[in-house]
Picture 1: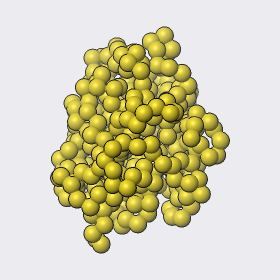
Picture 2 (picture 1 turned 135 degrees about the horizontal axis):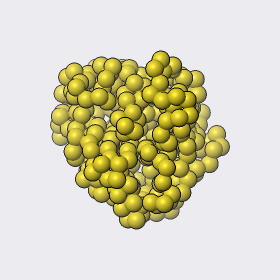
Picture 3 (picture 1 turned 60 degrees about the vertical axis):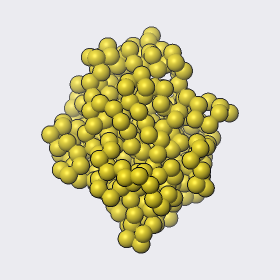
Length: 317
C-alpha cells in the first residue's frame, strides 16, 4: 500500500483489528487504522490492511462549529503528514477531519516531504498519524530519520504544536525514534478488556470524570471519548488513562495479560515554548465507516469530535 496515493484502494486500509470492533458490544469504534493480524506472535510484523470492501472513508462527517476559533482561512496552518506511508492522512481517514478543522478557521494542508527546519516555516501545527517505515524496511524500523526527529523536536521547542498518533502494535515501533526525542515511550501493545461473552475487545468507552483530567482545556465540553484497539504510553502530561478492568496484550486477540488500568492513553504537555499531544489510538481522530455496520465511526463517536477540535486549538494557541 502506498498511503501517499489518493486512489480508492489507498484510502481504505484499516486495521484487521476492526473485526474485533465489529463483534464487540461497547460503544467504541475502531481506534483506527489497520490492525495487524498476527496469530499470537509478539514480534512486530507488517500491518495488514482491511479490504476496501469492508471499510470506507466517512465523507459525510461534517458537524458544524457554532463559534469558530478563527475566521475562515485566517487561522494557523496545520500540516498533516502523508510522507511516511501514513495510514491516516488527508488522503484517507483524516480528510473529513481536515474539512472539519477548516470550519474552525485553520488552513489545513498535506505534508509530502521530509521534515526539515526550512520547510516547516509558516506551519504552526503538525499532525502525524500511524506513520510507517519505508516500504521494504525491516519490521519495527523507524518511519523517521534521526535528522527529522531532531528537526521536529527543535521546531516544537521553538513554539509550535505537534499531534503524534500511533496506534496499537505495530505502529508504536516506527514512531518511537520521534517519541524518544520528546521524552515519550510508546508501549507498542494493545489495551484490551472483555465483552460480556468473555471475548477480548479493545473498545473502551471512557469517562473523563473517572479516568481523565476534566480540568484540562482539551476536555472542555467533553464527558466521554471512545478509544479502541489502541496502545498505552508513558511520558509527561497524562490526561487520559486506561480504565479499570483493562489489560495489555501483544495483539487484539490476547485473552489475558498484565493489568493496564491507570496507564496513560493520551499525553498533553509543554515542550520548551511549544506543545505536544500524543494519542495511542488513531480512530479517535479518524472519520470512517463500515460497509457491514455503522456508517459513522471513529471521530463521530461520543465526544471525540469536540476532543479533537480542542486538541488542535490547544496546540495552536
